[in-house]
Length: 429
View 1 (spheres, rainbow, N blue to C red):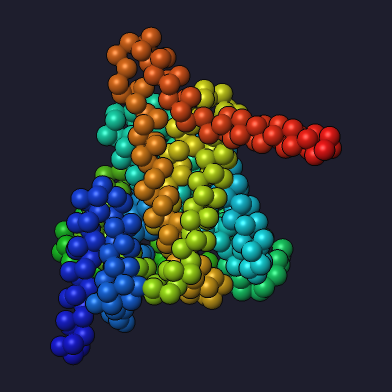
View 2 (view 1 turned 30 degrees about the horizontal axis):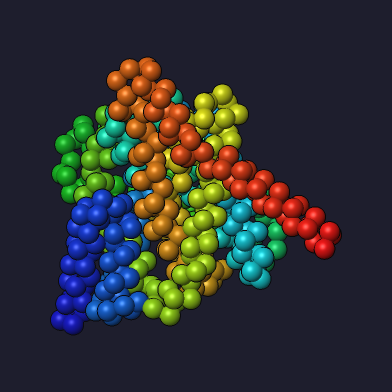
């Protein structure tokens, strides 16, 4: 490695550190802060930091370990709730349709429209969970529904991604190939749940013979990368394999071993995953950002409305009151890691254009920043009210301010009445 490359890599690491600090100061998800920093210091604005082969390689490693960690933190048992699954399903279906129709109406190809729809389905509840934890309401029904729906969203998203990549590769909807991908993905998930326990014999061996810590890290490192490679060999994305590797460990039943895995993986995620999100900002040029900004805002509006509407309707269908259903809808809105990862896959295989990739980044930033502020407000009756009477009073106040659907109905009705009045005047004239 030349001194120039070394200095460039050091500059990348320092920029990533600045991005994390920016996220903490602005109370944003670290992924958003890193993307903003990449945009600022990268080709989009200042041009001080550029991509390099070593950065790309380490960013890929960080991505694999990040997905492994997400799998570790997932709990398939939450999917036993029909309520959570239905919320997750409609929360995926509505954005998929909305994204596809929007892109198709603007004359983008069916394959690209299809892939953008899949990107809009992703949910990142990291911000939501941190707020729920901060406000001490994780034991509430709506919180458990959000957590379960997020897992359903992840699992169903794997199927959606498999279908989208197959469609992008063939240029047409090949029902046999799509069915094959779904069956393979489902088979791997079942294998992860049923037979994952056998793979932890490695941990028992390590524990029994007191193997050096470096060996543990190397075995873990190999396990994650091998899972990703095997997934790619059978036609899935490498991130699917990494995610399922984490799920495999989680479903093994060895809680203490799972915690050890999570403890070991944290330093690797902290070190390498920031480079992935920083790289997303470095991928975008100023011209691409400028051309994709308007579409990004429109995609953000579609992403917010469709995710909220799908999850709100599903929650109400299962008997939640209006406030709790609103909280579920708002809690599922933020996009984040999975949306950006899916977007990069689409860019890598050439199914989405660089301008649309920059639009996805804009959409992700908006949906990660604005909805959590409203979500925080929606929870105030549960945290501020001291009595039942006060709770009901605050609840009505919050509902009246956040009842987006009723307000839309009112505005549509007013527009319809104005249109009728205008037609009558024209006829009389």
